[in-house]
Image (cartoon, rainbow over all chains, first blue to last red; front, side, top):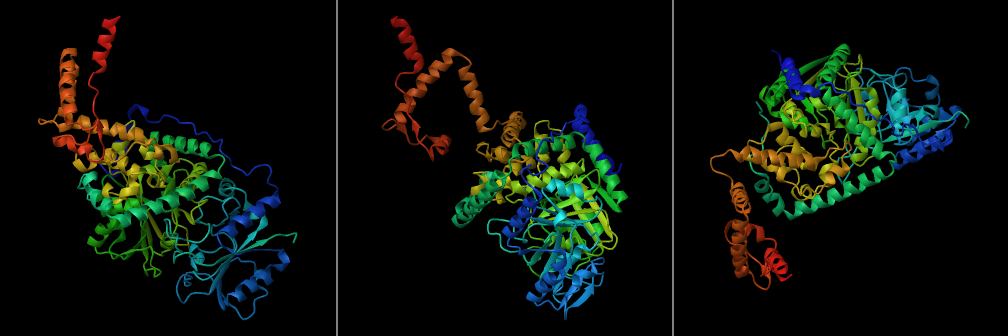
Length: 211
Length: 417
């Protein structure tokens, strides 16, 4: 008898006649923000919550994004950046004197001699918690890309911002590796010292088409 | 069957060094107070907290009562996504499986309760693997294999969900060769929709709106992260807990640790005396439920509580920990009932039962007891009881009984009419 069979048999023996009892799950919890939240309020809430983690966040119009990206990288003196495949080429149009390395298995963004910064898009964002979610989709790259400890500039389109965790989870296609980032990595416990493993510097650019 | 570290000492004895360490007690008290405050703030801004708790409780009960089907479904989904599922009855078997899968390669290993429970580090080292425990060091080892725990597994999709603060586990998920994940069989949930409950209630219960890093992965992702994914499902006494109709509720635990920081006992002793992680109220029920109350050490854990109920109030999946503690205390007493030499407590209780079983014996004992008690008292208080009973008066006085008992007063009153 394999261990699999033994574990399953133990479970069946343990449950006895109770096995297979259906338990209804009451799902009357809040899946959306209240009706008082207009679209602009959701975006404002996201900005407020992500700024509460100490993460710099700026709002730009679609036309202003290349300049804002170049400024963010220039301010941090990033000379070499890694970007995922499928990042819209226009985003990097304003860079000057910055070497752009395409992400791939040979690139280790976490290494001390890795790129100075990474630039990615995201799959979704959550207003309620101030979270960005990447799932390896277009313009997001491998999970390893977000491990760059020096600077991660993440571009969030305003229509990607969901109100709640439930809304964001429902938007994400299953099966892809997801990374949800909410504030800086810290040591668990009361002192909450910064952890050396997080992206020490996440910056968020929110693109709003009407700006 | 279990090679994992077992608690050797009874809780009261193991707690003495921690209780004597004033610096540790101060750190524990301040730490617990800070986490309690953050948790209270995170819960206060959640208007549907009661609904989330009810849903969390129901979805975990649904899991546990259908655990066999749930795990088979999980296995199918993980396999379909390119992963391999392994099963282990005991801790030693689980640790050996992990070591075999690592195949002597150096591994990165972030801290996780289940890895401590099975003794993964020792088994890996014995099999020739260098184990790099990740955590506070900025230097991340150059390894190609990682061993991790997990918080929630979704049977429907085969997704693994890992919540963390420090971000070192996230780095482990990006190693190139193999990821070996160890999970308790109860850590599964049936559906994707269950995540929208636990991704809110678990982090808030631990004091955050959402934990700083949440990773979700399903089998292997071509071109992103490890080429092989192994999931090791561990029983190690969980089915023993499942067989206990009252104790079963403790398997709902999602590992938020909220019950630790509200516990007046844990706040003074820390995790050490509980003998196995995570300790605290949930540890005091999980260890005896999974291992039985045969040893003096595990049998002492249900008594390491004041039954104040704070743990039940904060639990995000509504585990009534005091109820399970009381149930386990009964189990401990029952297990010792048949011994040839009764425990002192049992001998006293039997003597009391015999005395109280007959009105004449009871009144005679009462008269004698009152006389002796009044001889021991000074100024209406008994400051020290003789012999073994002295331990009870170490920290408190006992009021002297009145000269005339209620029974005597009642009889005189009835006679006067």
